[in-house]
Image (cartoon, rainbow, N blue to C red; front, side, top):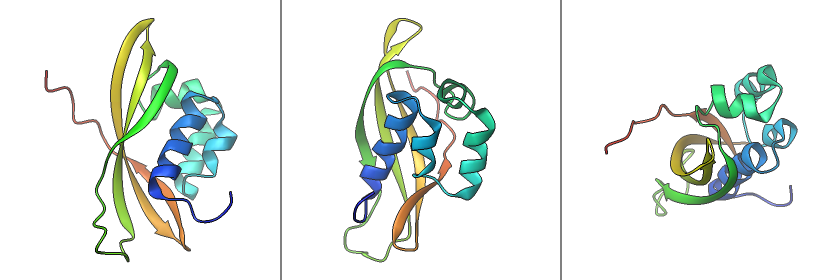
Length: 122
């Protein structure tokens, strides 16, 4: 990793590692130590999709839906980011999102939590 990554870059990097590259090893660089242990416990990306993110998908593309950072507070150390996932779930087109919390640790952003789903409002 070169330079300081933004929370958006860290968020997309993590989800890209899990859903596109399907690599736990790549995902580990974006999370803190307790989350690294959780990811390593599941060994493979499909298990992380199922058990940690509660969302198994293929052919995924990603975008940032929302980020709750106040740009006037440069010293914020805790933010949440919502990542929108587009792809296939059980062979059907699917769009979903996941909210993650990041902390700034030693001048770099790391994912510390995947927040519980709010549930569909349909």
